[in-house]
Length: 369
Image 1 (tube, rainbow, N blue to C red):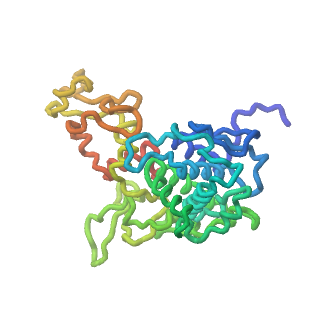
Image 2 (cartoon, helix red, strand yellow):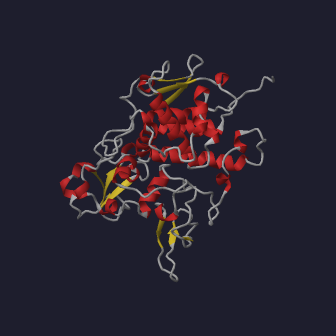
Image 3 (cartoon, rainbow, N blue to C red):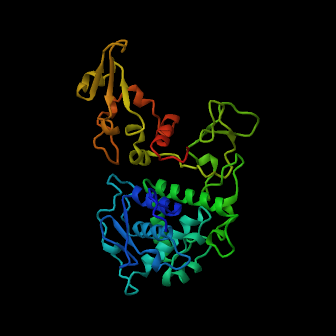
């Protein structure tokens, strides 16, 4: 090898996507040849190195599998839930005993959830489980959540957690980006490659040109689809803010169209509290008019600028470190300590409105570039 100076190193794109997904959910991924897969009961998931992988294994598959274990083990935030989703109260190795058949129910439920999540993006072959569990995974039917079996019922309960923030967004972004890679490499993949086995769905296109999104979703259920400004003819149409370019009109879509890769579900109050993008990082300052109630009730939160060039008194709520000073705490669930007296600039952020979606885009919670 030449004695050159090396300043950068190669990193596998799929590894990067799923390592980020784990971080977004509060987990740290470590690598060790001493174990195949383990969890310390707090934050660290330790996975083997590639030396112990089968030829059809990947770090991405291993991470998704452990995240599904986390969901099945019930450590996600309660659906009604105020507590953080951070996995701090779980048991070591998800409380499973891998030396006996005691926990087959939880293991089989994990397989079903993993197959369901991957299937929504046409990626089940890429994310198939490994070791002795592969035979069970390969026997799963077209709908791995269907049926009266206890494992199916447990997987359906875990899916309910997976469909709520922060899990929903982190998994959706990771799976969508994986499908993007699958679409790009399809022509280069050899017949024996897992990339050649993914569903043709990853190559299909929405009428506006983007790849298709998760199975079961349509334009009418997407947060970026809004009622069109004017209706033309008997068929109702929506405008797609996600695919708007420049200052031109947003393109029209029909409600029944299959959702594209940029799909995001409409936000609810739970998702709002888990997001908080409008209260942190997205914007640097919160303008306050002098005649607004908060200007007199909470002067301790305000900064005042009446210097040269200010054109009168300017009041604002600062955001040190990106977090609004009115937040009860700088972590999810985000709650405003002055919500009933919040300034007009905050009231303009309607849940799921254009300002809300723009804030999510700015902090990386949206697939919109």
